[in-house]
Amino acid sequence: TGQIVVSGLTKQYKNVRAVDNLSFTVEPGRVTGFLGPNGAGKTTTLRMLLNLVTPTAGAATIGGHRYADLTAPLRSVGAVLEASSAHKGRTGLNHLRVICAAAGLPRRRADEALALVGLTPAARRKFKGYSLGMKQRLGIAAAMLGNPQVLILDEPANGLDPEGIRWMRGFLKGLAAEGRTVLVSSHLLSEMQLLADDVVIIAAGRLVQQGPVDQVIGSM
Ligand code: ADP
Ligand code: ADP
Image (cartoon, rainbow, N blue to C red; front, side, top):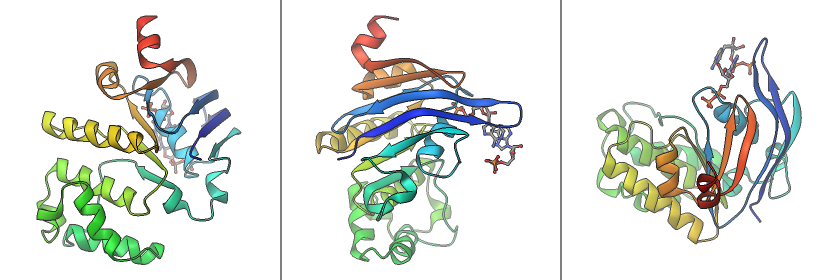
């Protein structure tokens, strides 16, 4: 299954403890909001989950495995880390086909992923002409190529217009309703109230609270 377990996770940069002995769990079938002010350590934590940053101490597992030990990472975990970028002159469809080829995924997955995020009409337009919202959708499409059980998104609502945010909300709720694990960071409590089932709140690298969104916000 796609349970995420974070256990004693710590990242020390030269003079900054970005993440400090952080432990929490994330359950499948729910949208979990990872909430904290800018600089709280959200990005560093998500990057440690994905084996992009090496922890100073502690560990994180996804479905019982460390990311580095997953046999088919793209089929298990999708990640949307920052405003999606692609070769400017490439079309959205070609961008996804390149990833499929590199990852050994069938080419048709590129078309399916574009349809999933509503980008089929823009499939053959060049990336440089995409709006920010379209770039975000393309980033999500890329993360969905392997049909992952777990989706991890770092501030996906950043820079989106209200329509884009509404779309994102519905899309992520739909993934959770299918039984997937959805972990999404934000610095906006208001957005999490509309999106998340559970929240994990951190500040200065440490856990503040974890639980169902209604309970946690009711107790604040
Ligand atoms: P958030 O995503 O919640 O805004 P980050 O994880 O980006 O927080 O950052 C947490 C803290 O760690 C901040 O003080 C940030 O400046 C620091 N930090 C992040 N990455 C690095 C790095 N590569 N080197 C040094 N400090 C870093
Ligand atoms: P590391 O190899 O330590 O994980 P990165 O490759 O992420 O570091 O970043 C290289 C350097 O850039 C860091 O050691 C740090 O000095 C600086 N840096 C990167 N991101 C940040 C940040 N968010 N805040 C402060 N410094 C950063």
